[in-house]
Image (cartoon, rainbow, N blue to C red; front, side):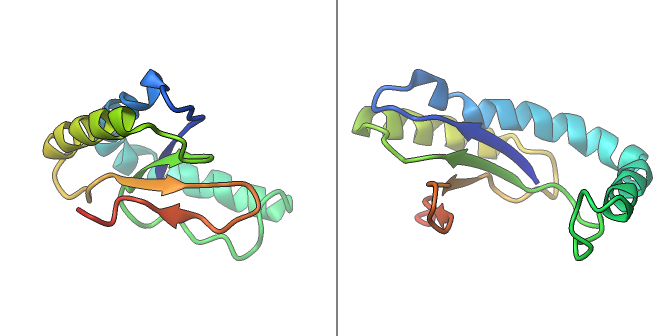
Length: 119
């Protein structure tokens, strides 16, 4: 999973561009993942062996999944609208086989909540 985490205030303009940042990363990983998958798995295995990662960590097998995570979702209506416009553009230009970008609220002390269910 490629995750772009943003701190959000009512007028955070940097939030608009998070989907474009992930789009760029998605294309880079689209071309690189198969070449580095084995090395990433070896790194994960070593991390598990050193007990830096839980033993039940899943193997690196899947493709690419994209998500933007906000702490508290304090976006104003204007910011939500602009974010939605950028999200549509980014989703229209994803590499083949990659699911639409997800948006989540990752508020401290609470379960993550997906906030893009309307798509």
